[in-house]
Amino acid sequence: MAEKNPESVHALDLIMIALGCIIFAFSLVSFNIANNLADGGLSGVTLIIKAVFHIDPAYTTILLNIPLIWIGYRYLGRQALIYTIYGTVVLSIALWIWQRIPIKIDLKHDLLLASIGAGICGGVGQGIVYRFGGTTGGTDIIAKMFERFKGVPMGQSLLWLDIIILTVSLVYVDLRHLAYTLLYSYISTRLINSAIDGAYEARGNLIISEHYREIADSIMEKMDRGVTVLDSKGAYSNDPRPTLYIAVSPSELHKLKEIVSSVDPRAFMTSFSVNEATGEGFTYRRPKRHLIKRKNKYE
Image (cartoon, rainbow, N blue to C red):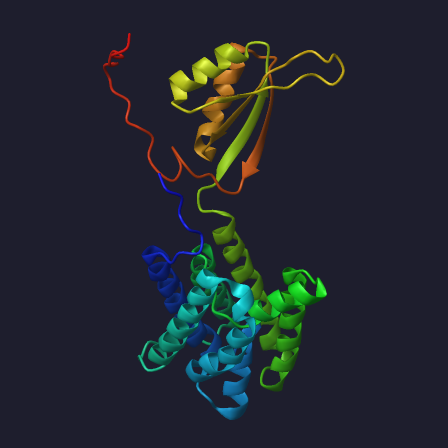
C-alpha cells in the first residue's frame, strides 16, 4: 500500500475544520460579543477593534491575517498554508453570518454562565479545528516565527501574546469582565488540549510475572485484546523477565486486573493513562468473533 503524503489535502479535514470554525464563530458572537467578554489571540484583537472602531470582526479577521500569512507562508508547508487560509476564510464568513442571524441566548446577564458557555462552545470549535490539522491563522503564525528565529517555544510566545492582548482589552472591558474572560480561556484551553491529545483515551498496562504466557493467553481469550511481549530483565538479578504490554479502554481495566490476579496474584502490574490510542479496537472495530471457531485451512 502506498504511503499517504503528509502534505496532501483531505476532504474530511476540510469538512471538520469548517465545522470547527462555524462553532467557534457562533461562540464568539453569542457568548463573547453578546456578553462583552474579551479573548486572546487574533480573535481578541478583532474584538478590541470592534469595540473601539466598530469594525465587524468578520472583516478584520481576514485583513489582519493577510500580512501574517504572507510573512509566514514559506514556513508553514503546503498543507498548513492551505488549511490556514481555508480556516481563516471560513471563520470570517461564519462570523459575518452569525451576526446577522437573530439567535440570542438569554443568560440573564450572568457572566459566569456566559464564560462557561464560551469556554465549552469555543473550546469544542477550536479543538475540532486543531484536531484536523487546521488553524485560524493569527498569533499561531507569529509564535512560529519567534520559535524559528529566536528559539522561543511556541507555548511561551502564545502565552505572552495572550497576556498582552488581554491587557489591551481593558480599553473596553473592566476587571470583572476580564476575570470572567480568564475563566473562559481556562475552560477553552482544557477542551482544546483534550481534543488535541486524543478522543480515544485508553489505559496502558505493563505486567511482569513468571506466568506471563498464561496471562497473555487468558487476556487474548477472555478480552479479545492483543498483547505484546517485551524483552526485559531484572536490574538486580540480571535474569530475563518478559514484560507484557496491553492497552485497554478504561471500562476494561477492572476485568484485566481480575484476569491477572486469577492467574498470578503476585504479578507486578502498573497502569497509566494513554492520551490517544489508534488502530484495531479503538479507531476501527476489531474483527468479529464467530461463535463457532472456523478451522484454519492450513491445519
